[in-house]
Figure 1 (cartoon, rainbow, N blue to C red):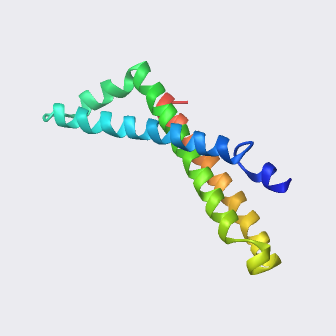
Figure 2 (cartoon, rainbow, N blue to C red; figure 1 turned 60 degrees about the vertical axis):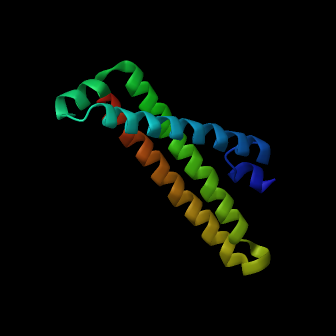
Figure 3 (cartoon, rainbow, N blue to C red; figure 1 turned 180 degrees about the vertical axis):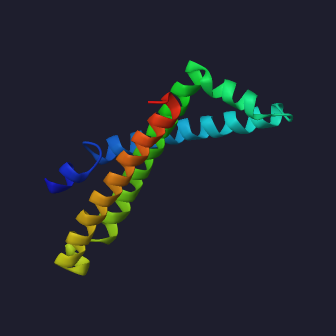
Length: 122
C-alpha cells in the first residue's frame, strides 16, 4: 500500500503509459527545435524571442517541461524503489529512499515553478 502512495501513478501500467507519452512529447519537441535551427541558419535573438512569444510555442514548451518532470520522476522513483529496499539493504535504505524522494520532489517542483516563470514571465 505504501508503494501506491509514493508512486506517481496508480499502477505500473499507468506509469508505463505516462512515460511513453512523455517520451513522445520530448522527442517531438527535440525534433522541432533541431529542424527549426537547421531551417533558420541565420537565427538571431529576435527570431528566437519571437518564436517563444507565440502562445502555441509557450504551451508546447510547458507541456514539454511537465513531460520532463513526470518522465524523470517515474524513472527515478523506479530506480530508487528497485535498488534501495529494506530487504536487500536494511532499514537505512528505506530512510535514504524516502529522503531522496522528498529531495527529488522538491527539485521537481522548483524546476516546474521556475520554468513556468520563464515561459510566462510570472
